[in-house]
Length: 468
Figure 1 (cartoon, rainbow, N blue to C red):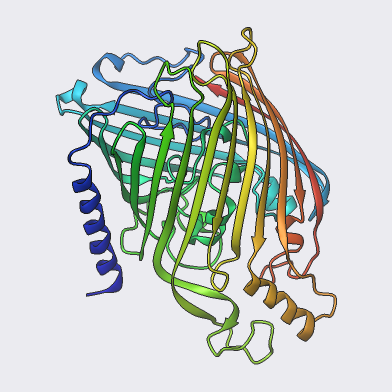
Figure 2: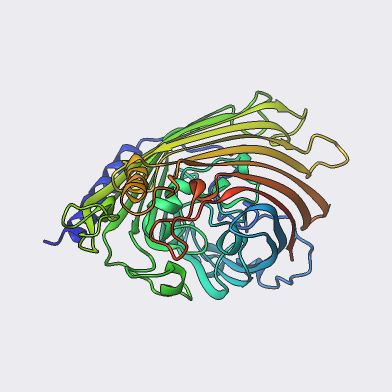
């Protein structure tokens, strides 16, 4: 039996065990924040219940078919630092459909969700910065592509939920609700997973074929597990987005990626006057082969003249994370308005991963004024540490190639964003980002601009979001 097939069977067995553990769970009551509905990748809101401009007709909604459209456009520029200075415009149109098959054809508690992106414009991180904390969550190569397309079946009062199809992981795993105001991509799917996992892991703009199981063991305790194809773009050189340009590769034969998370929430019932919070512990396990960050297949440094030119391949990869979020002030007679703080941390082995330690933290102010209940303001900081093995490669280049070769250390992020709602469905977000040591201070050794030192960058941006 092949290793990928064996891994898939092991994952299926683990999923069955989780399902059995939940057999006696009590029905879940409504939470302050409903995490069981499809999330708009642009705003984090539910695509089923959302505030819009009211311009998109939905004549089939009474039959369970709802359409949604969101457009994000933004201008970003770095006044200093990075690879070069400049400004760009980028945009993304997101078209989504949600189908309640119980209303449409009478299949109990079965829904379908799909959405597609039309991406255009340039990317500031790709063109100007060469950094890890990609400065925009919509930055991607121009294309029209399918993103998610999946069925979801629920049992009980939202006690058990199973999704099957082409899925993203960033809206449910390793996430916190208090990052929704931020425009930096790593405030959604963190830089450690986007850089360490093949093709960036199942996150915008590349979802992956797979299945996700959510079990609400109690009103406070939940278990979340997922199995995904481990390389949704497929192996090969160049940008993964070019290898899966339209999002329709539907790959299922790559070594799998497993994600698991246990989460516990408190004071999370609607109407509960106490301050809500949540803690999550999770991790990933990938069954594929990963390149050593320093050595080639003949155990020689990539910087040495006698190297084979092929990286030393190591079996599998894994990592773990922890997430904490806590509301520290609640506007009276509301659930989500107030002040919330968050912190996330993660780690991975240094020999096969570019990033071996990651952390971020921040604070979000939500609707503090009664006359501006939907405005938000956030401040956050992030840290991504380059692994010791990758740093050792830089030291080899300094010894063997160029005594002035830069040694990468870490990349840091400081960001502040204000979200101003002009009206329901229309917001603008001025934002500032300060990137410390872009690319951890230098370009990648194997890249086209190898060995170039990069200075700290100041990035200014303005985003507008329209939900039709």
